[in-house]
Image (cartoon, rainbow, N blue to C red):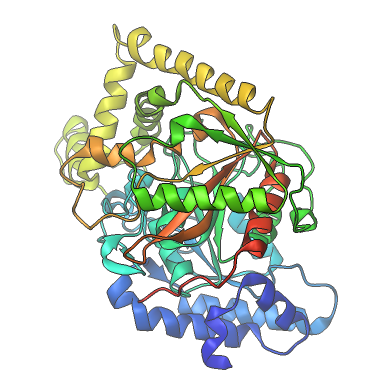
Length: 487
């Protein structure tokens, strides 16, 4: 059994640990061995923390043996996207400019998981500063898809999604600014949830676009994701945008049925040009929901076509402001220079990658004098219209079900020379971030080449319980098991 421990779900591992049928060290060792086996081909991790992980596992075993009610995540080996400040561990954001940055503190979600006794296996690969849809924009090389090593894992949290899909960890954390949890979850065949904006603290998460960024988990099952989100969510006085709403026990929402639930089907998300296999899989999932008692409702989100343009003004403007702190003086990479202006220019020119530079320039232009009203302010007005679309849609539906992405995972290098085509990969996910809503990707099938397909379940603000209920009901109703990754 020891050789198979890395394949456990979080809930399976939790139950075995509580019964003392297996130790956290054994599960952690199995995951570390799996990482050593597949990483040369996959490149899902930037930093592996073997010594620290085994020490944390031993501490978790002592805590579990004491019998004083260890928390659910105690002893569970997980991975962290390399965007979370982690005390004493290199945190790069996949950028040369932070290549040697070691934070002196933990992000709030890292501190919460540390307090629960979770085991941190290491930091996962990502698009630099979370800017990308393929994890090809990394200073440490691209992450490959566990189902086909010639294809992308999605982005920007591709390393976390790939690590879960390849059984290198039992679960992982990502961030979602415009689809960066849901798209890689779809491409890699795992569950990924972007919670309501403000549901989870962003303190200690390296910022990309502060009004859009949100923390969320990747997991092998909906139940695992529910368990993780409960550990992550909750008020944080260090994040002024964080909600003080009580955190429900999401696991209790998994009742296995959706009888009478109204599922909205947006016509704007089933468009010409999307892959036929993707549309077929999501339509089949909708029919499956009907067969277990849900009711389908046709809805419209008319401002969806403007979401990509709106997002790439709002997000890049906020990135322009957030990334101004990387000046070569306070921390991070510092180039040699004779004066302050040259120091700024050389440090940023050598430290930032091409996509980050592109987005900084876009955002700086949108915020510049004479263009602010025409671009950034107009984008914020369109954002309001998009949010109102969802409000009207939820008057007649409880959740919305749609594709996560118009295609399955594309080939490495296929879109790197065409940024606009790459940006359109997020066409079905971006509007959710603009509206601040929760959404989850749940695997719903495979294309003709065996690549995973995810469906997106979207709910009103703070409706994560409903999303978990809907996703879990579908998981239970599916016949047959998912196909394992090929890596």
